[in-house]
Length: 587
Image 1 (cartoon, rainbow, N blue to C red):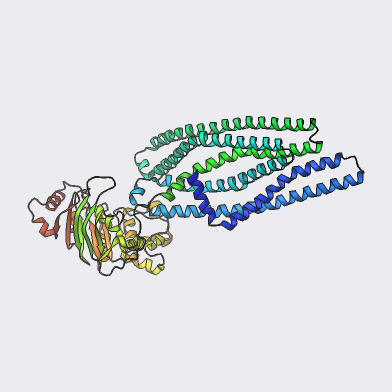
Image 2: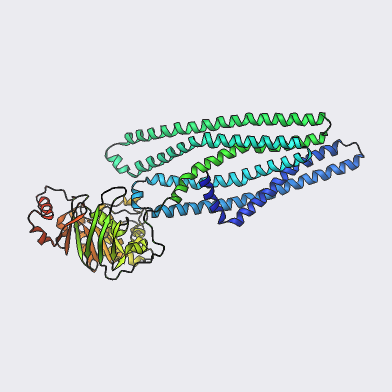
């Protein structure tokens, strides 16, 4: 709870003047509740007085006028409070969601690989709405309740110390009881319920995003059963939370009954002993009924407070989690002219692995050189590219582009200078124009169309009913594989980056699409430093140099013809097996 409330306090400090206005208005509105019982008692005294009737009627009307004025003041001040809380909550919710999204976008690729997108979305949205609940609970509910309790106990205690002591002591014990039940008994169950709520979101997102696979295997009923199991556990945990909340409310109700009986009995005793008039009794009872309403609700508010804290915990954890790969404080934009790449005695290990994946690894790729990366799955091709993108940090040595250590430059500027065409390109559920222009957001339609022409994509786009404004579906599912590849190549053309990385984009396409994409890629490679992750070795024959990886080391390098002459060489063995059809193209 402390960590969440400190996080909320930091949000409040950004709008300190607004919070101060809300608190001041709420204290003023609450003061009217404290004063109202005094004037209610005075009204009873005025009405019951035996003096001249006209004078007592005048006094009663003045009291009624004061009470009406207090009521009007309370209405106005509470309106100010509600308007202020609306403004504060909307700002806090938007800021926290924006900042959480900002951090999630910058978390490492490993973090994203191990997280459900649906679960992450649920953490952010649930935490965002919890801020609204906490603002209402703290500023609109608990703040006035504590003010009324303290103010009323002080006013009654000034007149009858024993009554003030009973009210203050009873209210304090009740608050301690309500807090203990909520924090120590209900909250642990709520935390477990929230974890299962997050799993429900993850299970839904996982099945829905992979619906094509579900349909391919006729597995709808199987996925229904998986979700049914998750929902059953969620329901069991949530039922326990709600039952505990209900029992907690019952215990608090019994405590309030005891306090009400004690206050009423003490008021009767004060009247019996001649220390209180009927008007005083009216003051005490009116004050208690005001306090009783606040006390009755305070347990509910404390429960809401704890529930809001539980709902915000995962959002706060996102804010406190390290990014993994961070820019240096003095990082500057990278400036790439020629595009020379140097791996200088690089060492790298994955996570907690004891043995390094790369050790004392050195390599130079000249500016404008076209190289292919070859090797079995897990040999280091993808790791090499991820290190170049700085999706991971090296543990030893350095990676330099045109002499600049990539750890000393801003990641965004580094990646903006690396155009990537993946084997399975991912598109946003936006228009084709938006997807192509993602490489350069300010690009004109003419520039977008030119990039599409170069990528052999304009023809199929022009045939679509809405052309470049056609929505492509989630991850581009409305397009064929070849069409998605050509859109990705058009995006790379528009990026116009000096370094190009191709995760061989033709490995699983028909011959017509492959020919179009090969032609587009030849245009794209012109005048750039090019790295091709090769799955089909026939595609690397024309490259300047081929790098053969084996278990994180550079086993062989050279042009295609030279590598084929090596007796027992890895490249020769792979090429011969593919040529004979014994080895799948993806190896």
